[in-house]
Image 1 (cartoon, helix red, strand yellow):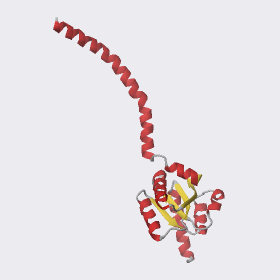
Image 2 (tube, helix red, strand yellow):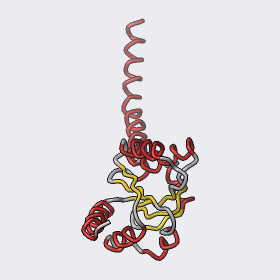
Image 3 (spheres, one colour):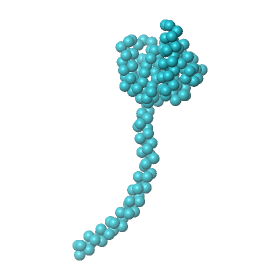
Image 4 (cartoon, helix red, strand yellow):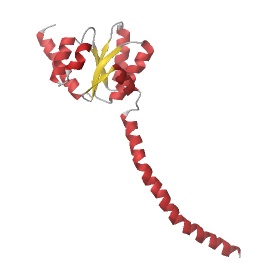
Length: 175
């Protein structure tokens, strides 16, 4: 690989990783081309990418993005593929773990999510969370619940005199 190509790859990675809320390192050993293509297709649907990268180039790109390499250094050995996303990190993790459940590969090493180091176990737990939109909807629902309760109580207070007046009206009409 020529030096110009390496520089271009590092620039592309730096640009992509600087925008990504999730950077996940995996070991793709044992995967064939069809499986990697299927995984890439699944991840593309959730605005994510899966890319095989040389460890030395990835280290340079991660330094450019200001990621702390101390925790990631042990994972940057052997065969390494990189998952990153421009969209919802949880959706990317869900797609990856759905693929892993079916094919038993790749092996998740570790990663960075919202500039914080995560282990493979933490990544798996994050994949079980609902997507960001659902979490926001649940939060809004919880915030609105007291207001709806107050509305129900206040409208009940206003309705009671109406029920009394209607009952008096019905009683007078019957007499």
